[in-house]
View 1 (cartoon, rainbow, N blue to C red):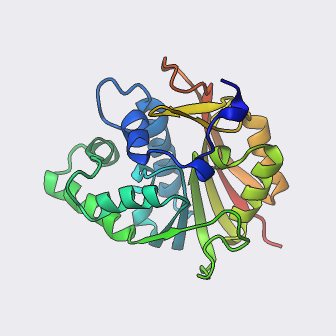
View 2 (cartoon, one colour):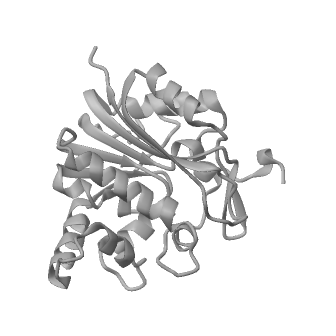
Length: 261
């Protein structure tokens, strides 16, 4: 299949529940856990616990309906605003937030995040804290200068974008436009945290192959610098799992701050 015939995440949509089951579940045969759960949670927890990234508002612009990358954020920000492109992703996320029947089970990720010594009651308290923080879920439109028009969002202290930029960008120029659009949501001096798949072209979700932009660490770093950011930390983990569902070669974590003009 030619990459130009792959479906586009933000245009064609996708099965958000199938995405969670395939790449983020706690099932024994789910081979992506090291890259999709452990790697982001370890790095984001280490970053926040250093204490220099915090504030009133965190904006999350991430792929699908995942929430595990936000578990650590609740202790450092008063408000978390989640922006989603697809209605289907919003419905799946709200199903978990509202504890509705059939919601995706994030228990495996919660257990990974919390101290093993914590009681089940303490674990439940943490889960409820995440749910309370995720009450602000807003649909966005990438084609608009103000993605959440007619809403005007207050400038954020931090943005997290996990596995989204490569999915919504057709080419590298498009990537830069999207990154700059994300940057406009940040305060001067605010922080951005990115997770991405490197050197790949597609992810299989159900029967569909979804396009993502083939780029490497050098491009990711340069893109942030060209967009006015200073990189504070960067980690790359080479892929070790075996699956033909997706063809990425590595995953990357980058934390950076926006230069003050």
